[in-house]
Amino acid sequence: MKYCSACGDEVHLIIPDGDNRERYVCPACGVVHYQNPKVVTGCIPEWEDKILLCKRAIEPRHGLWTLPAGFMENQETSLEGAAREAMEEANADMRDMELYCVFSIPHINQMYTMYRGSLHQGKASPGRESLDVRLVTEQEVPWDKLAFPVIIATLQWYYQDLKKGSFNTHYGEIRKTPEMKFEIERFS
Image (cartoon, rainbow, N blue to C red; front, top):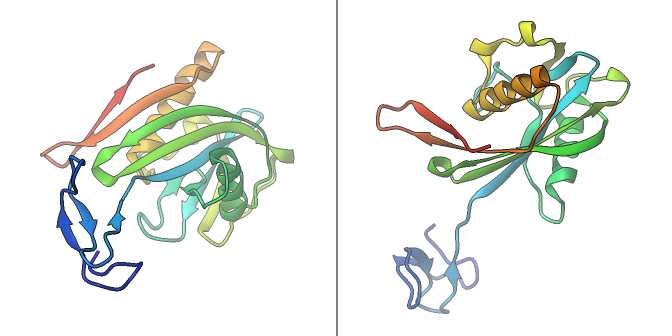
């Protein structure tokens, strides 16, 4: 950040009085510009013994597979955002959605909320952010072509729960190691 969105003056990165983190502060008008994590929300669309995956038509990770998910919009709940993302990416009408897992990803300042839900009538088609959509069984999941570590971790939990015959709500953390690998911790 270079300029204050309130008055246009140049901002400085300092620790404001009473705070413990550096923030962009405008010396002219005194506005503290807080930067907070982004919330990504999405879902696991279920139909019979399959789930719906989307092949990304956008960066990052163009051409790889993912679950429908994206950034929450203002004035929507995470559940509404997950349903919206399914519609935008896969023309998928979701029903009976329940929170499935939450992931913190501090190295990219993101938090994911993922829901399970029923894909109405099993119908889907590529939306503007998808090259393709596909209903797949566990054996058909392209594990080596999944776009993000959070999707891999979510699907691993999902298939573990499916085998147990009961679904729990999960919490996990994904951190990047100094070796540029991902460390996934599961707490449920």
